[in-house]
Image (cartoon, rainbow, N blue to C red; front, side, top):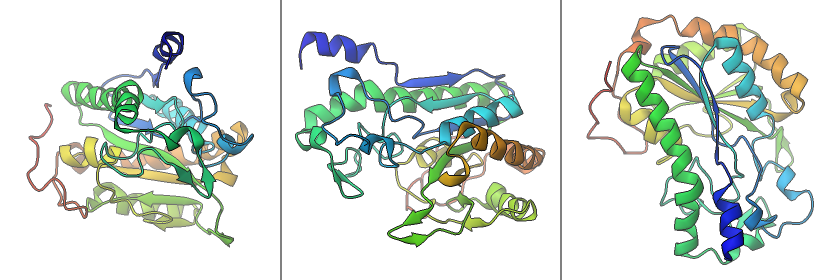
Length: 277
């Protein structure tokens, strides 16, 4: 990699921060907010249009996150790089951290990514994003009350030719404090809700596992179906429906205490001390 390429790479900011009061009591994060790539990586050798698909990012998730943060007056942390560069929602040792093939698409720019290149991407993109999430959570916990964490994602309407009926997916591990009441409230709000659908919420090393579960905080991953948020207008419309449902959950006192639940991943059996109040 040339010095010029490195300079362009170093100028790439991997994090979008939405400022909000540290005592807001809720933090939104968006792991797959962007399909942007640093100039040094070009288009990773992908065919035209491939990076615009779900393999590149969670379509509509960033707009949904920004609107939810604005409506609730909460801070947010979003990634600014494509998951095909390196996936911020995978553990540092996950074999899918840098994908060589994604949903049938070969990623030529990742084919030669050796250990040194993966470490470079970890240092420049993955760790700064994770560190920003961690630092924000710690600052909010210090200020109080303990924050509730919503990780915003999106999923494709179909998978291998089969329609996905859910409009919203609530992905969670074993802590029921937020998940079960939220699922009930979303259903009462007229949504078709997937309980750990279309994915399982227990993923070793993902952002919630590392930054929320190990701290005993209340948090979960919310998946929105992409056809409901594909345009800015649709994303904001969905956020307008979700925001009051989310806000109603935040009034429950049990969400403000650290509570350690064994993870289905088998991780975090020895728990970290609760965050500062």
